[in-house]
Structure formats: structure tokens, C-alpha cells
Image 1 (cartoon, rainbow, N blue to C red):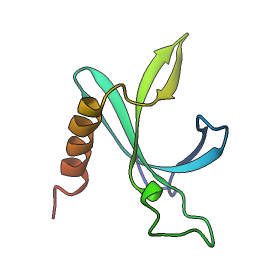
Image 2: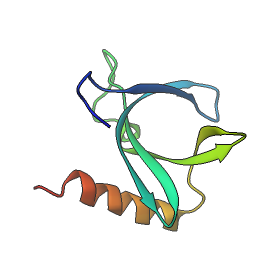
Image 3: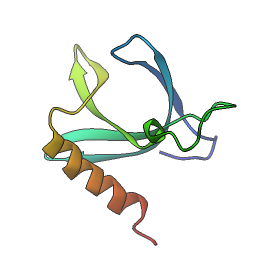
Length: 93
């Protein structure tokens, strides 16, 4: 995805019904499944040191011809995909 026109933001609703604005960072495929990584969008007055402001990884599911973002199914899946995103994001360092 190109940053030519600036960052891409999406809004999702969590399990508690709160809207979260996320900034798209990267996408990758693992075991035939697509995943997307996001950071919570910064809002004025927000605590930057809040641990909930870390990387958000969501799975892309295809239902009825549409892409739907979903949470990951297990800690093992999260760990594996997280490691791949870290390698991808910090490969040049």
C-alpha cells in the first residue's frame, strides 16, 4: 500500500461497543491467511505510554464477497504473526 496520499485510517468497534480509529501499517500473508497491522490513531490528550496503544493485528476474513476484520484465534497465532510483522517492519534496522 502506498503512503503517496498519506496514511490510511479505519474505524472499528470493539467488544464493548467503543469505536477505535486505527492507522494501517502493513499487511502480510501467513499460512494462507491475510493479516493487517495497525496502530491506534493518536488523539490529542491521549496517554502515549498507555499499553493499549501498541500494535493491533487483525485477520482478514472473506464473507459474502466482503473483507471482514477479525481478532486472532489463539495466542500461538498472535505470537507467530506478531513476530512476522516485527521482522517486516524493522527489517532494515
